[in-house]
Length: 45
Image (cartoon, one colour):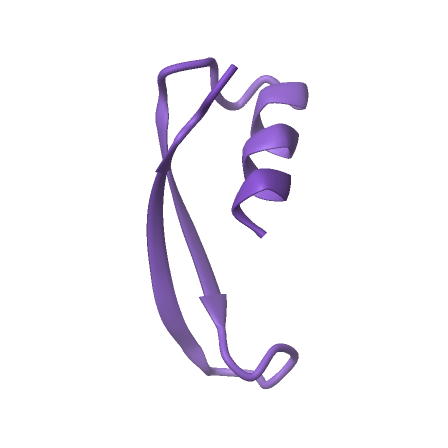
């Protein structure tokens, strides 16, 4: 999930190598109103 979000952010021009991004998700996936995951990741080369 983190690798995919980082790749898409780079490809779409939202982030560059070295930037930090916030990734949010919910478990279980697909259940409305269940955001309970926050991950801060650095964009790698």
